[in-house]
Image 1 (cartoon, rainbow, N blue to C red):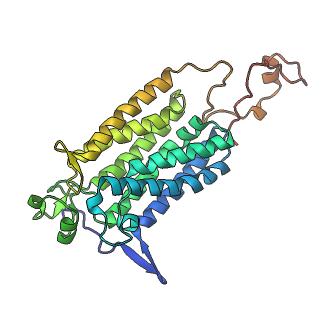
Image 2 (image 1 turned 90 degrees about the horizontal axis):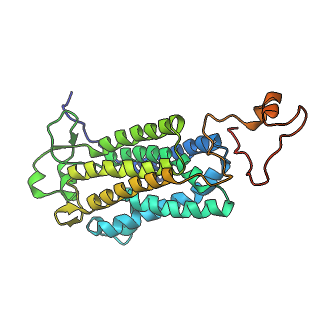
Image 3 (image 1 turned 90 degrees about the vertical axis):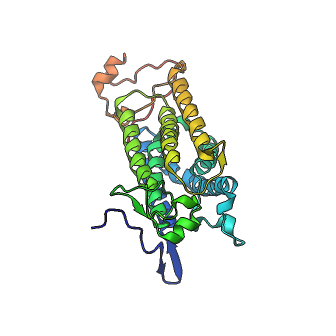
Length: 314
């Protein structure tokens, strides 16, 4: 057994006349997983799961466009030298922050048109985004990209010479053959942090959009670590990779956003955000009506100022 992770010998396969690239395929699988997870989570807090698909139809293309724009702007030296180079996402090159930013803007626009609680939806989608990103990193493995410094660790990633050259790594590293598999580190972190967010949502009282703020904070903080390892092509400023500055800034933004969202007082008359453990109101019996001040057979009295009860899971 080799004391390293071998690179795959292919990065695509043919399906009839079509060429299926593993990079694109993994993104599609990740998107499908994110939609399924978000539907379940949004239903659990009383939302309409069908809305998830409608939002995804707008947000997913926006995310791909935003991710490619971010890549083209921040790493113009890596754009393939063909007329369709700026659009060649199948060869790799989607900046996650650009993708999430534009997808979020478009998603919020669609949610507000439907008049739903945007913060609740953001918390439902936060772990799903991490799962999608983790699955997408498998595509980086097939593209032989997103690797770090040379290493002799048994889980080092073998990178063939031609990919070392085309990856834009410094000349002093070209004679090495195994490198830190930062794509794998991110995959593990994404799945682990998604699990943490799900646990927090079930066991701690997190005000929306606190979980999404923690997604921004946690992922960006991890990227500080990852950017310290990566040696592939990048724009540098004052000796540091550009993404290092962006990751640091977004870590602060996420932390402040979470703090402010949890310190915000609950508006008068606004019900607490439902959780996945909430029971549907329809399951309450006569005892619940009596506790609410109504006689058996009568509906409980409600204050004119109070809003409707938050629906439970269906």
